[in-house]
Image (cartoon, rainbow, N blue to C red; front, side, top):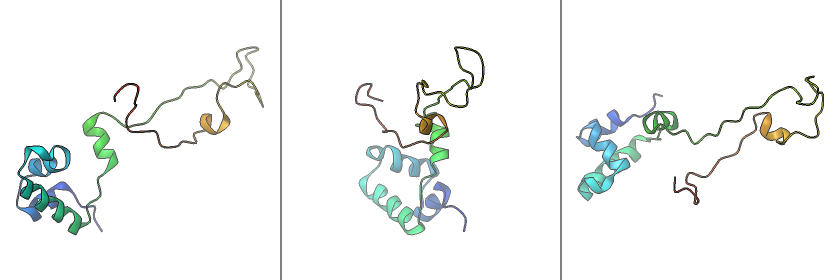
Length: 108
């Protein structure tokens, strides 16, 4: 089954894709009955937002990058075990956990 898009919702609600986008992102720009109609059609079609598309349009992924060297700074050799690593193995090996959407310290 194909993923439901905002184009599908727009057709079902009889509005433009821009209006559907406003309904999801800035509903205060539209009449309440229009927003409700769009949300109802989206629910009936089983719409699920695509996080990749969202990150592409907002230029924000919510991911944090981490770079690390495989070499020890002391002798230049690749260590088998380095108990002095600054990051736990779970983090440095790619294990991740969700980060909060907004930082209370930076307002982002």
